[in-house]
Amino acid sequence: MKGEEDQGRYLFGISLTDRPKWQQFLICSSGFFFGYLVNGICEEYVYNRLKFSYGWYFTFVQGFVYLVLIYLQGFTTKQMVNPWKTYVKLSAVLMGSHGLTKGSLAFLNYPAQLMFKSTKVLPVMVMGAFIPGLRRKYPAHEYLSAVLLVVGLILFTLADAHTSPNFSVIGVVMVTGALVMDSFLGNLQEAIFTMNPETTQMEMLFCSTVVGLPFLIPPMILTGELFTAWNSCSQHPYVYGVLVFEAMATFVGQVSVLSLIAIFGAATTAMVTTARKAVTLLLSYLIFTKPLTEQHGSGLLLIAMGIVLKLLPENKAPAQNSKSDFDPRNGKSYLKEEKRSFEHAQDEESEEKRPLV
Image 1: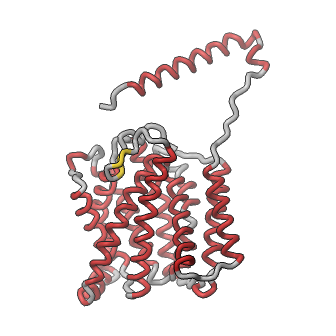
Image 2: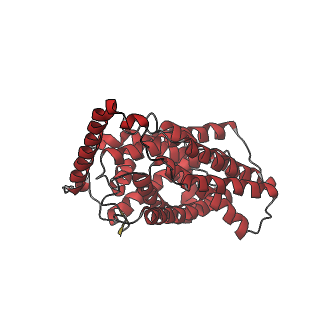
Image 3: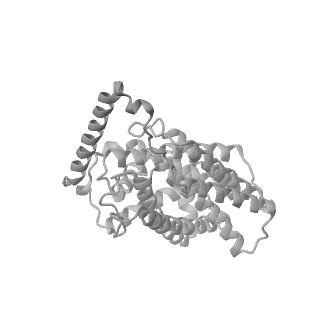
């Protein structure tokens, strides 16, 4: 979890500052779960019922809806605290991830895509060690927690014999590319929040969308999707209504995700997004009264174990005084060490009391 990066952090007018960590986590996670559960329902309707599989075009339309919603939130470029160039790399991987994820549904069914995307937390954790400004290292129990979560979700997905995953080489390549971009995405966002804590979620989403939209034009033109999607949606204009509604819900989810990244980091956020997939699957079984098998139960058990393991506090044993601490020969160096620690603590306290502006 982060230290002071959550100072002055708001989520749709709700102040996250000075709240306990569990309340911050609950508020951000609730916004995320709501936004992406609605998103999942809309995607299911558009891709499976209407058979419209235009990932790049839908991401392009979604981007413009984001810009309108950000404007209505009162954000302007005058509020930016980072230069535009900060968001070039981030925007490329963001749009690439969205486009490839949505586009892969044309070649993979939902369970197959879910199996691949559920592994996202592992590459995110690994990539965090290489991103400049982060260089994160995670304790062994967090890696174990991620593995349990991933294996549990894959088991749960495979348990549905009637919708067993359909694999296509093109779809696998696309969803793998999305995973690679996802591994950079969360860590790049966390690095920007870490290096400049004054960065707001609205700035992050606005800049990455504005810079990222042009990246979507070449794949739309090269694949011919721009004209095909335009003609299809013109014949069924109500699809735009579904897309706008989906984008509004996803906007809530995106801003909530950025809040989670700013406060708790990319890896924790990736685990929350993976857990959301499990909740989505479980709800589909409860709502549509599908039978739950032993394999479903095993998957849910592993998912629960992974979540519980992640929530366990890190038990750092206090440093005990060894004999050398009381050794007269080490006395001076020990006292100097204590003095330095005390002075460092005082410096940190005075830093915290300084006004941010």
